[in-house]
Length: 389
Image: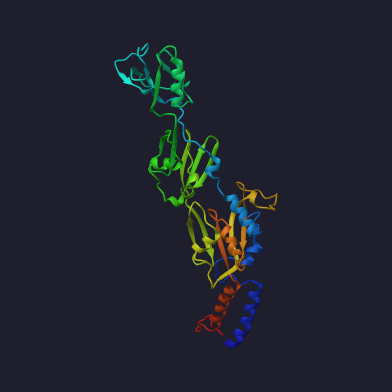
């Protein structure tokens, strides 16, 4: 009786296996490859496209996801010359050779450029640069200083005093920097405004000034805003490439961004989980490895899928009637790992935040489940194994 039952059920199971269809009551981790390909246009989500991934597409996506480099967007070949601006507080000292005509003082200073004779000097009270960019110098009047370096201001004051003072020399010192600052915000230990100096501070100097980061470096990104230009790079990339550690300019805003990026992996893999990854990004090959790889006993290597809401500009043959949501359209990328060349493709294919990676079950695995139930019904005492005959 049992043999007759098996003789009927096993051929039926083989027929079902060939059709790729099994009863709904058989437990499964998700859709088969055939079901994904056939039901992507079921209407539950409009405009889903299934795209076969090749090397050209993987490289196109990788290029499109590349963030702009600071070295190209914020190119600078010279250090900060520290141009004075409104709000800066500066101190002016004027020397005059004897006989002093304007700036007599009891202090006698010997200056090499004036010979061995003592020079009279006077240090003017510190003053803040006015909103119109000027300061006041006795016997010279209002002197424009905004947008000039200290050396240029010194030369300008000397020019104003020529013919009035006896061989004047001038020294300008910044007492307080209120104009040439960089704002540092985000996931740093101390948000701050960092004053710039003629040394030429760079991007990483700003984070050192702010006391470092609150989060792990591998999950941090750096955003630099200058005028109407804003660019973002992974912090790891800035640290590894000295060219990205660009010189800062007055008014720059540096933001440390914590990016807890994750992807979800489902189906016939070593583990099903939501897995975090670094801000610099990872490839599909790395993502599959972090999920424990494909399950040898269950996975259909032909049916590796990546579900993503993709930038509509990157998807060809999009139905014009499909309205993109925030510029995104639903796409299912299919990778056939039965093809050895696909392993090279997975190294170029970029994984994005909130991607869902799904590895379908093989028809053989579904058939084995079904056959297990058949045998259990025929004889509950039989333990089904790979060696079942």
